[in-house]
Length: 217
Image 1 (tube, rainbow, N blue to C red):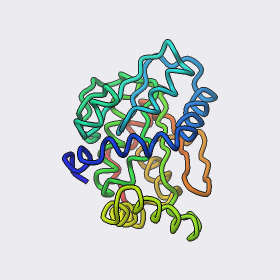
Image 2: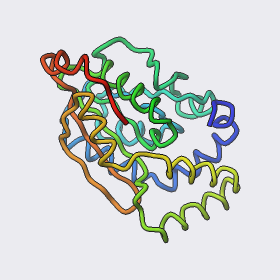
Image 3: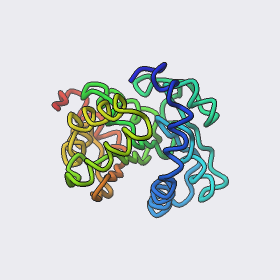
């Protein structure tokens, strides 16, 4: 979806996301178990800003930045309008970079570009955190999801999500992609509906080793 299409559903999406606030809270709690006192966190594709709120509840002294392609989403979240493939931050700016329910919207080439950008703005020993929809979810659950999306947003948006999930990476494929970029997996978990991957930024030595490697998808 392009920026204007996200703008058109921003208010409804905010209400939809609120129904899943617990998911964002659990992700924030998982981050606490991996990094105790991060100074700066970036939420890529921040949407209506619920994850930022939950992170601030757990890390009140941490700076949390959010970017989104949608101007209206950023009005709701007080985020920065920006593209995940061209982050408006300097190298080594963040302790954690999060992609929460956003990568499934991207083509394979844009996933790689956005992950490279995430790596660029991560500090040494920083953590990349991904939570997204698990395309291996049981059929009864996917049917339920698409039906609820159709009821809430309309059939067109439901079909859009279905097509994006069908073309999205499996969790293990995404993990291999991260490994080829030099990330080291710290933890990965699959659930019925979604999955988590937490990966550490590669060292400078590993960066040099992989600088000439061609990434396959």
